[in-house]
Length: 167
Image (cartoon, rainbow, N blue to C red):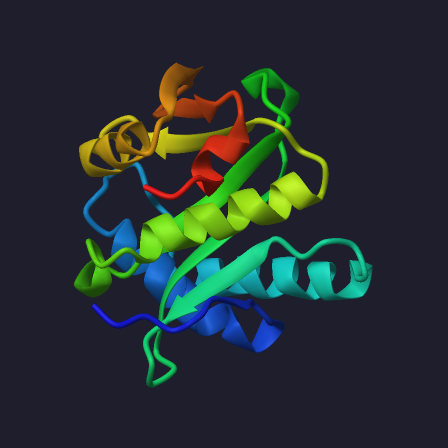
C-alpha cells in the first residue's frame, strides 16, 4: 500500500482524528466515547500542545498520497505506575486501512520523537479484549508488562530504540 510521509497533527485535525479513533474502537464494549466527545478531547489536546510549543510535539498523523488521514499516534511522558519513561497515549488506524503499515510507521515515528526528547523506554495500554493490537505489539518486540484495571493491560519496550531498528 502506498503511504505518504507522516505529519504533525494540528487543531483542525480533531474531527478526522475522532472519526479514526471511534471507527478503530467501535467493536469494543469497553470503549464508550462518542465521536463528539472524542473530537472535543482531541481539539483541547491539540490546542494545549500548540500553546506549549516549542516543546517536542508528539502527535502525528498518517495519510494516503491523496491526503486522506488514516491513522494517528500520540505519546509523551509515562504514567509512573507503568514503570517506563514514555507512553503511547493513543494509536489508531482506521479499520479500512489497517494492515498497510500505518500503525508500525506511526509507532516508530513516536518512538523516534520520544527518544529524541530523552526517553529510553516505552509503554502502551491496550484494551484487554483487543487481541489484534496485542499481537501487533508483541510482533514489534513488546512484552506484556502488567494490568491496568478495569479493562486494560499494558505492553512495554524497556529500550524504545528497538522500535527504530529496521525489520
